[in-house]
Structure formats: structure tokens, C-alpha cells
Image (cartoon, rainbow over all chains, first blue to last red; front, side, top):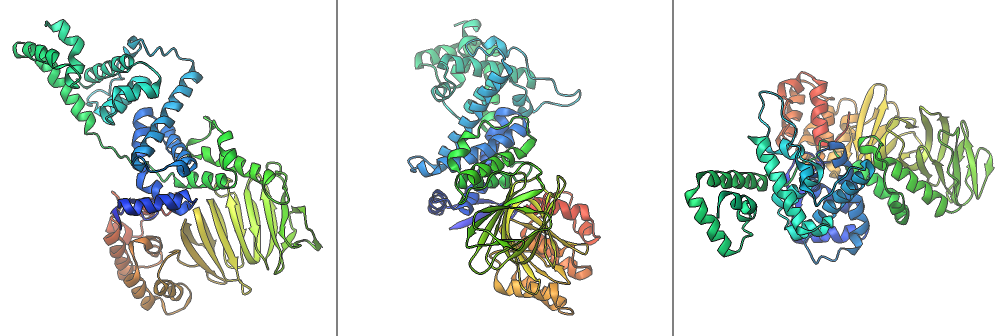
Length: 191
Length: 370
């Protein structure tokens, strides 16, 4: 059974499928039914975009990466065997897409980003305009890129340090150091 | 433990990652240290606030058209889609997939179609045309391989032939049997085909408002899309959009047709009111009467309102601009009942004919980009 839980836009609709219905939609999308894939896109795009915008703090990049995530999902979908929930798998693809972009961006800008050295995170997030209070989203957006990625994955998305370390290719101690530094910067920014 | 030692393990304590013995030592210290207790409280507040942030954020606009366009290109050439990355960082906002789609299709055209079509030069003054079946004609000459279609020339297919037109900067167009189609402009500012009769399917990757199709009843303006246009012998037609958006115009009347919607055109009237491609037959019949039968609009509208489902918002939204007075109020109420207007869009404003509000509601409904 299909039900619409936010009927705001019939052509940009957010549709939540019951599990058996979603399984059927996934099967049809795996068989290259683009209309079925559009249903998956509409059901899951807010979840993917949330990860992309928080980890990049840039609307243009977040939109690009959201689109790129769904292109990748379309390509890989025939390989999806349902061992994990589709949402978990999709989430992983989105995070991998963003992290790959962050690494590429790092290479492009040639910034020294020694992930073993948390001192690079000393710069606190930019102060908000006088008279306004910085909210948590703004403060997260102001974090240095990799500290922001670790904070979002751990504290917002609920990932474990070992998972983050594996994705980033760094030691667990490094992700902990980045997380602690990010939290410290956020506390300072929110005071 | 003293305060300095506590600082080193504060985050692990809050995250519950300390061994029981160490946790006990921290808690013993916290009992007697208000400063460290305050720090733990502040940290816990931050962690709780982060965990409570919404896990879903809707993009500011619909990203599907570009995704769908890239996928459609990838369907033809999925192996090549991967090779085309990384994507151009400097490309404008959400349109990075458009060149991707174009490039993938060029590779497709060059690799898989029979016979192969060489990519045309950007802004070329002609299109490449290839025979897909039988022996279509360009001008007076039949061909079985490929040919150039110059401005002013017709492509004609009989009952057993099909053709494909391609321009690397614009897109590709399939010409179905029993069709007549002419290239009327091929400039950097506009490429126009005239479909006099028959059926064509277009897959367009040019920026919006660069590709046009003139039919006897209306002009189709590409807004970034894939669609099929049919023109009957009497000049009437039907447009079916499968991806993105198309605008139909004639004599100052405009319809915006999003993906999975259709629109009928009638010679002398122009475009009708668009409808979802799975709209119930009684709704379609009532729309035909509303759009094209003089004196039947009032009764037809009652039937439309009675039949309309949430999926028929594209129809009701267009009717906001095609009705007035109490009838407009009924249309507004029906649409608002199924799709709450976005902030800033009011009943009074819509009834007063506020086009900005109407467009804002259309954007929220995913009907157009305006």
C-alpha cells in the first residue's frame, strides 16, 4: 500500500512506500523503470540532501552531490541485493559521494589538511551578525570541512568512530580528536 | 582525578565510551566539581541538539529533471556515463548534468546507433539525419544511411520508415512513420522544427528556451525535457512530456506541461489545459469540452472539479488562470483542499489575479520553474 505523507507537490512529491510496496518499486527500478526510480528519488531526496548540505555547507555543491548520488544509485541499483535496508544503502552512497568530493576538493585546493593534527581546527566558526544568535546549523556550517564531516556523521547521523575512520582512511584516534575539536568550536560559537 | 585529567576524557564520558572503572572515577570527581559538571551539561546539550536535528531537508527546488536527463543519457550509454566523470566544477549550479547528458548521448550516437551519426558541430547550421527504418526522404531524395538536414528542408517518412535527427548542441529527435517535419531555424539563439503531420519524440539537452517545435495548433517550447508530440491530419495535436517541462503557446495562451502530463492542442484554439497522463477519462472528456467547445465551459468545469484527484493539480493550477469570479473561487478551494498553498499565497490574492502568487503556488506544486 502506498500513502502520501506530504502532499505538497504532486510532481515533486514525497511518497513513503510501505516496505513491501517499496521492494516492488526497487525491483522495477532495478529493471530500468525510470518512473519507478523517480518514485524512489522523490521518497528519499530529502534524506540525501540533508546529508549533502550539512557536510558541504554549500547549496550548489549539495545540489550537485545529491544529483550525483542518485546517478550513482541508478548505476549501482542492479547490484543492490537487499541485504541492508534500501535507506541505509542509499545513505552510504550519499556519504561516500560527499566524502569523495571533499577529498577531491582538498586535492584541488592543495590545502594542508593533516588529519592527525587537530590544531588546524583552531579557527572558530565565523561570528554571526551583531544582535543575532548563531544557531546550531549555522555553527556547523562554519566548521572546517573535515571536522564538520566527522561531527555530522557522528553526532547528527549517529555513525560510530570505527565506521567514520574507515570511510576517511584515518585512525580512530584522529576522528575522535576531530570530533572533540569540532564540539569545542561549536560550544564557543554558540555561547 | 583532577580537572585537567577530566578534560582529557570528557567527550568519551559523555559518549559512554569509558570503561566502568574510569566512568566511576569521573563521576566521583563531578560530584565535587561544579565547573566540570557544567561542562558535562553543556556538552550533553550540544550532543542532544545535534542528534535532534531533522534528518530530512528538502532541496530548494526540484533536482529530478537534471537527474532524469542524465539517467536517460546513461540508459543509452551506461558504460560511458562513468567515464565522463569527474564533472565540471565550474558549471552553473544544477546544470552540471546537462553537459553530461549531452556528452553521453553524443557517445551513444557515435557508438551505438545504426547507422552511426557523427556529432554535429556546436551551433551548426544543419542537423544530421539518419534512417532508422526504411527509406525516409530529405527534400525529394530518399536515403538509407545518413544525410544532412539544412534549414528549409523537409524530412518525410512513409508508413514503413523512421528517421532520427541529431544536433550535438541541442538534442535528438525521432521521426515516426507517416510524418512530415521541417528544420526552420538552426541558430545559436534558436533551433526550430516544424511538425506538419505525424509524430516525433524529442530528447533535448540544450538550455531551456533554445529548442522549439511549431505545429499547426501551437508552438512547443523546450524547458529542458523529453517529450512526444503528435499532429493529426487536421492539425490538432497532443503533447506528452516524460521528463522536465515543456511550454505550449499560441495567441497569448500558454500551458506548462510537466513530466507525466499531457496537453491537447486544437487548430484555431491553441493549447488546452494540461492533465496528468493517468487522469480518468471523464476528467479528460470534461477538459476537452471546457477548452474547445464554446458554451460548454461552465458545466464542464463542474465535472472537472468533481473528478479531480490530488494528482490532477496540474489541471487545477492552470484553471486558476482560466476562470474568474465564483468559478475561480471554486477552483481555488478545490486545489487548496488537496494541496495547501505555500506561505505568502492567499485566497484573496489568487482571486484578484495575482500572477506572482499563482507562479509561487505552481513552483511549490512542481509544475514549472518560472
